[in-house]
Image (cartoon, rainbow, N blue to C red; front, top):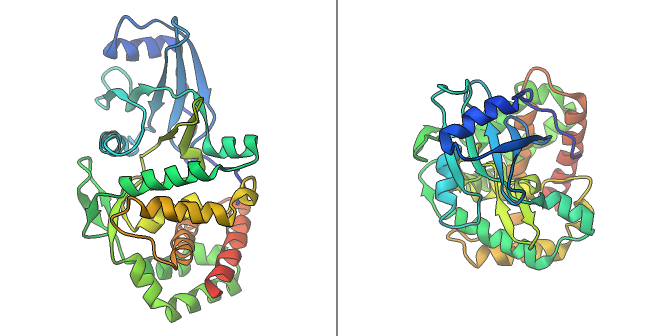
Length: 322
């Protein structure tokens, strides 16, 4: 798939006067001289907050009107900090007393996304992918009894249907209407004939980042790795996060070599409670295919999403058939 994305919510405009009021709730001594919108992401609006001290910057993350998953994200950062490197959160407010939307004030990490790093350097260092996989395995330490949405305490709030049920529902709904009929038929035949694989995706569940892609991993100036953006955290199979990490992406696919996959496998299993098995690549692709179908399981979606997802599904079906 390409790296073009359509936002779920419009960017939220905010002026520096309001940001001063927001920061006064955290520390009234902070003097702000510039705001800079980060033009990435699907739902939240993120601003770099420059202060009078050039070396000190903050990130102001504003959630959409309905609050998004702000409480889950704050709890997720606290949890993740035990195992992986994440930015500090300094202040969280969802009372809407000062500002009419939930927001957090946190560290701004001076670096680039993993996607940008790979494109810029024309490579994906094997040691780096090993360390990312090792960190992800640690993040997956927390186990659950079901695949489920989580509450603000990261406990199960709503149990989700089986993977097979989600596949069948999506293919018999909007997602199935959007994609080519032959592709739909091939998927339905595959899941009918390979229920054992689907059961593997529904047998063990862990805390999952939920949107673990190369744009949600930062590489700082010292080439340290930071995990960010936990607003879609949930309980799921280990293969959910790994699938999104290895999803086809036009700009970086050529750097995803066999050595990268091998190093990811070794790095993950070095710290994992639930080990990747030899068929892990097929399970990863099967799990991510359902995530991609979920993106277009709406009445109206961009045409380019459908065509790109069809291409990715064709490639996935080829891998599953080997």
